Length: 228
Image 1: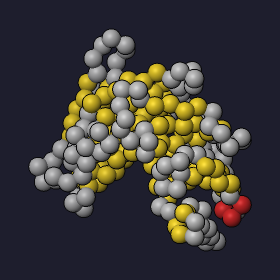
Image 2: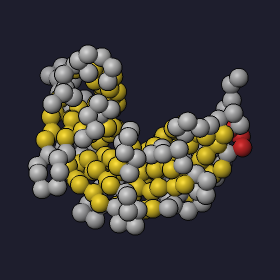
Image 3: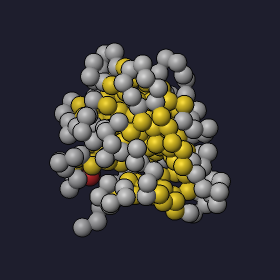
């Protein structure tokens, strides 16, 4: 059965939907848009959606850290956590006081849901520890030279963040304990000078495959990039 429902808009006109994610182990679909709304809907009844005014500006990305929490990133450089059981107001709002850059993307750690990563339009990647949601800690990595379009945690290395950006590169950043420097490996191809927009990691292959896609229409693949 196919179903299509308009959920994001300005007045009578549509607004771009910038992110969608399905609740892990559940049946709720979450979406966010340039209208600043977070929409929650049962997967089998999209028309029965709930629309939350999450921000006065655009929302750029979202993810589910847990089955009860939705995290959204905003063009204003904030990340917000919502409990989908009572989502009218965010349970936590945090930002980087060292920068006014916009957040372009957000991702949750696959096994430690209190860890989030955001990518910014100034090329930086931030690691957030939100165990204390009132005062979350962050660490900033200067990784790229342009908008970071996607971030994600390496599913086989719990201390590595993968990112891709407008500068045409994919980067793997491995953070260390406090006080020790992080390490970043940048992956690029001479045949690709355009933005890298997306990637995915297959942790089940013997050589740990990473595949990315770029504005040039190319697929970039490496089989060793995420090994340390």
